[in-house]
Each structure stands twice: as C-alpha cells, then as structure tokens.
Image (cartoon, rainbow, N blue to C red; front, side):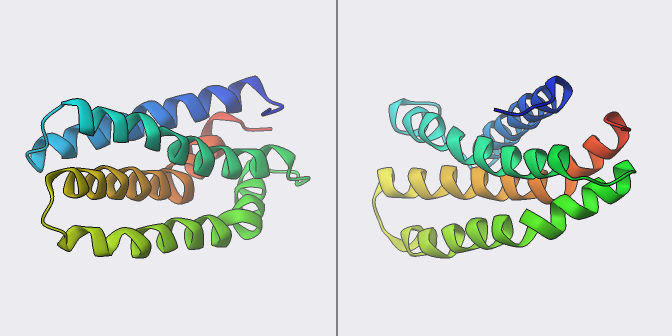
Length: 136
C-alpha cells in the first residue's frame, strides 16, 4: 500500500528494529520467550506496522520539494495523531502493571515495549531515515 518501494523497505527495517529492541528489553526485564510472550509479540507486531506505515505514507504523499519539508509535512499531518494513539494505549494498559498475574504482566511489558519503540521509530527515527535515504 506504500507507493514507494524504498519507503516500504524503510518500514520493514523499522519493524525489524522495533522487534529487536522489544526482544532485547524483554530479556533485560527478565521475560522468558515462552507461549504467552510469543503470542503477545506476534499480536503486537501490528502496532509497529501501523505507526511506521502512517508516517511513511504521509512522507511519501507530501507534495513538498525537499526531503526535509516532506518530513516536516508528515509530522505535521500525522505526528500528533500517532503520538496520541500511542500515548493513549500506554495510559490504557498502565493499570495492567499493577495486576498480580503472570500473563497480565507479560502482556503489559510486551505491549508497552512495542508501543514505546514504535512511537520512537515513527516520530524520531523513521522521518530522519526517510529524509536521508529518500532525497527526492
């Protein structure tokens, strides 16, 4: 659905980076790779695709002459909605952090990490990467 092949590969690179970051911090938090954590990782990959795809699509469709202006237009158009969506999800799952059940804690940690890394990539890393790589 992304009309630029290089931009689509940038999304794939962002998703891989998000997943590596999530797996690394899961190990740091002491979360083992077992059925519950793998199910929540697979389920939450959609979040990383969603945020990255929205910003990249806005960048590609921006009708501006320079790459910097396209990044600014993408963030002006979808930066705030992406931030609010991620922030509201984090606020919504914060209550799960205080539940004394293993499955719920693993769910919270995984979703929190995916949303946090997706937001970081969508707002900071991806516009910068697209500005450097897609100079048109």
